[in-house]
Image 1 (cartoon, rainbow, N blue to C red):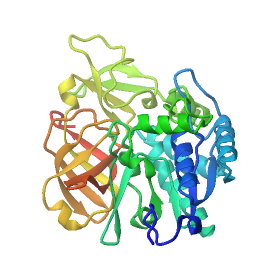
Image 2: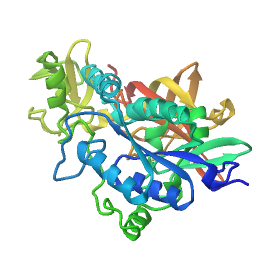
Image 3: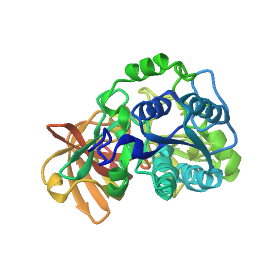
Length: 376
């Protein structure tokens, strides 16, 4: 028999590891697996020690979240383990985040976290437990065709998390399962309430977990205080029109905090870490015509890239038509629609549409963005 996870075993003989963050999504996934008769072990990662909550939302992998995951596991009567990954998280996620910001980029630590401690280290741990699958609460669809697994955008596209999972390898995708990919978030909340889980009304995580107040510069100041080096603010012609207090205080597209008077609103249109300068200009200078990518991860084949495909350059962004030229693990992307404020350090994710929806073809890290109206 083939069970609901697509595995040729009876559910009771199928061992699954559920990644439990302590939030409502992963808790409901654990409950669905338990109700389905699977042999379930919940795993919670402790990633950092400075666990805090804010009035606006909550962050995952904090102390309270670990307790919540444990309480859900007890209610569901499933095994629960905590893995202490603070050192790995510091070296591979937090340090990488800081390095990227210091280099004038806008990093996405959630992708790095999925790429390292979650889908690499937790994947290995689940394999070591001889589990048949690693199951998560991500909103992304997984469809198996002709013996191969493919990733698609979630049914609830307001919650779709495929952008954050572009670096998932084919080996990992074959092993992973995403039960929430075909349901809406409201349905997830409803299931949690019906099961009377203690996290049914828990707010979603909003901030980056180790930046609970959204204050990136304070994190960098804590670990790299020497990074706050003053420098020049230039206009798009290269003339100095002001001074900044460190490039880490700025991101591409930023308008507030420039503190320079001008007839038109000024935006940060480029950051040059090599000479420690910020370039500001009118909004039209934010429009990007081409980007270069590094460290590609491809889930599709070469034929998928022979025609126009869609790309996403930010998690909340729209799909954009583009032409892709791939060379080894690098790519040149020509954007065929208007888009502004694309920053190095972000991800560019590839999609193509078929009868099942928007299929993820992989993606890469933005290394360079070329402004349509800026020569430098």
